[in-house]
Image (cartoon, rainbow over all chains, first blue to last red; front, side):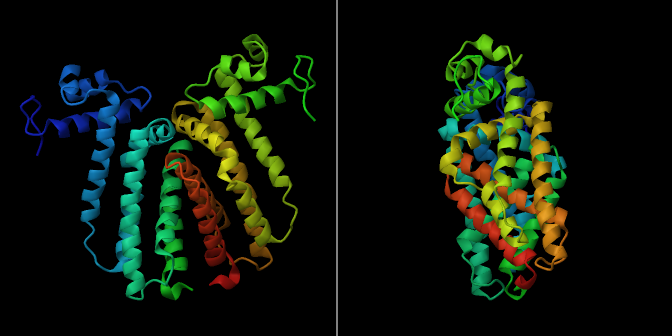
Amino acid sequence: MAAPSDESSSDPNEAIMRATYRALCEYGYAELTIQRIADEYGKSTAAIHYHYDTKEDLLAAFLDYVLDRFKDAVHEVETTDSEQRLRALLDKLLVDPEDHRDLLVAMLEMRSQAPYNERFRERFRENDEYVCYLLRTVIEQGIANGVFTDVDADHAARALMTIVDGARTRAVVFDDEAALTTARRTAAEYVSNVLVADGQ
Amino acid sequence: MAAPSDESSSDPNEAIMRATYRALCEYGYAELTIQRIADEYGKSTAAIHYHYDTKEDLLAAFLDYVLDRFKDAVHEVETTDSEQRLRALLDKLLVDPEDHRDLLVAMLEMRSQAPYNERFRERFRENDEYVCYLLRTVIEQGIANGVFTDVDADHAARALMTIVDGARTRAVVFDDEAALTTARRTAAEYVSNVLVADGQ
């Protein structure tokens, strides 16, 4: 359902988030301005400032929006088989870079600012804790039903996220789409050789 | 041997690189200026510009300097045992964050600029190719002498660098020293369970 583009839209926030996404992909974080977001939104900067005082407020909200989109994507994973569910989660985390490369570029710029920006850092931590919780839960389920060996589920979740974050960084820094393919294979090796009970 | 601090120093470049290191650690990449580097150097900005036309020239040279320092550190690894040598290389790559955290912060900022800065991107690629070559060579040696199973050595090297880069990113973004400990453990699990011949 395409949102109407006037200010009485039932969800102006969704339209602003989509405009922010497009502006971030086009200009990157360092060159992002409220004017450029407003241009993508098709309205004045005042229409943005009505909802967000500063660019930082808007970007903090955007990081929440990205997490919500990820949560929606995760809910599409319907299997209850632990190993299949874990592999499906990893697929969601290591999506085709062609669709998301520009967003990965902008996200790495924002991630690199986390040491200087507490609100960004809090969002990135919260996102990571949520994803680690999802991974840990499915690993614990797999241990309980004998699919996985009795590993430290918290460590295994962080190990897999280390692979995911490495892939995201490498895809951007080296402009290398193969970085995500390498990471999918590495994560699969970790699951098969470290986690799966008959892999030992 | 401490270099004298006058311009007739036998190695002004080394002194400028050290000043750049300190300025990067103190101010980060975004706030770095030639003035701040000159202040650390204890000389005028002209003394810097005598060697480097622009801040970007200086930072490209700094990335070469960091790689050279890493090469020196790697040469300290003296064992010829493949598994021990691989573990020693990984230790060098996943060093104690306390010593290097500020540098990791500045390096992630520079890495995030790679899509916009070809010279940075070239350096990061060159560094990565060098380290992947080292890892691949020791893995190939281990396969040849039967310590490691007959894995795809090129993939295994990239898999390990994915873990290393994930750790570097996570240590900075989450301000979490444990990220490097997690990565050391993950890399060790990969070596033991995927590479080592009797680990299967």
